[in-house]
Length: 200
Image (cartoon, rainbow, N blue to C red; front, side):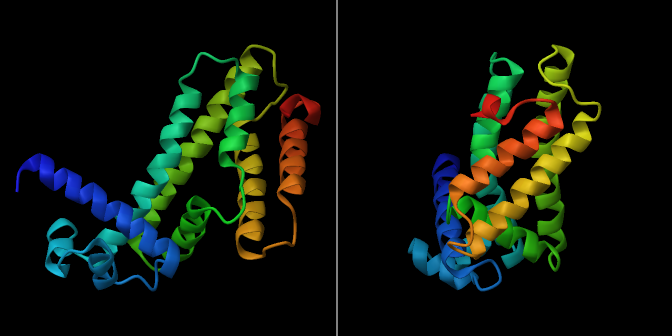
């Protein structure tokens, strides 16, 4: 197998693993499930991922990196801080029973028992908060935001979004996406000295 073919096969295996995990959950996904779904041997799965834990961690990272790539596009853009913040809140906000949020919630739960997954989820989670804190700091510097603690504000805004995402993903129809969007704007506006309408 050429190196390029191996990379293509690895990418396909990771995509398949994400689909299987979204359906079965991290705890209930077996390497044989991924192999069967991908139409390959279990030996090939172990060739690419030495252990089940490594497979799950890399599939989780693969799924989350898709979100972080979109985040990077926003953060690196030349848009002003307020425009970046609006876009980041829309990117991160839960939008129903999304695969991405299901993976995050499942990843956090499994991280309690799987050290490799805990280390990875912590790194990826912190990256989002650091990028949000940077955008807030830039907005404070140019006078757009009034916030004495950008890092703390990033944590508080994220915590509200995480909690609402869990409710929406796990308890369907308890709260609406519209309510969630309004509450996220309200919390972010209070943290940054804005009016909620400025975050529409």
